[in-house]
Length: 287
Ligand SMILES: [Zn+2]
Image 1 (cartoon, rainbow, N blue to C red):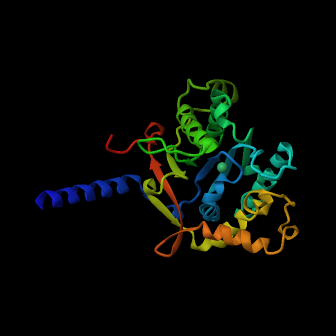
Image 2: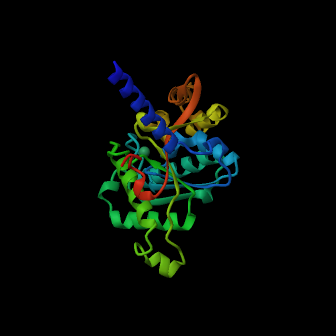
Image 3: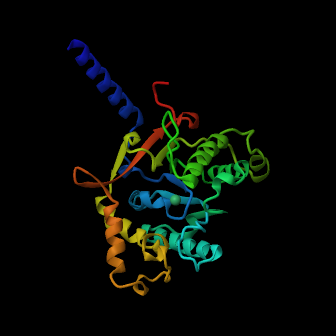
């Protein structure tokens, strides 16, 4: 019995330490005037953080979104070309960002092919991400969670984006890596100090953002991705939802609403927060 109690106490202390190490000292809803860079694989990967981005934008934070691919294969509609889909998805992304209060000049797309990030030149992509990290100098970097003491499984482009971003963050802090940008473009080595990882295992999340005030905005921004979240996935009928079959708007809104996560009846977006040197982003404090 004593052993069991001791075990429970040790587990409790471990969890308490873990939480105290990883939770942001100042809650995310109090963050102000931070520069935030979100990196995703496709033009809609930022959707799972949209309410948090809207909140942060309202609180005078400076938000950039960098997407690695154009999203040019994400459809089942046989009549859409890759080029057309690239254009459609760029516009959907800009429209969604507008709902959040973000302008087009905060959107960067590296233009890689959807579905093939893992086969693209890693060194080249990392160099491009490093360039933007050094240029933007984010206080907080948001990305797919590469994992915490182990690698998280994501579908292909998401998997690639998680590790490419992690490797780029690490490279950006070393002045002799991708040094051409430093020598010729007057950029400096830069170590990102804080991270918010999305899309990882729920059990690894250590911070939740109350998005009560931003639920409707999140649904509205999500509804801009008509090629992804409506019957437009199978038959794209343009960017105006009124051109879709009757009841489409309700179906899209319902679908988006059902994806919202709740804790104790409060709608939330959850993240794994990490503060520290880039090399430690996937390591637990006990290492
Ligand atoms: Zn995606």
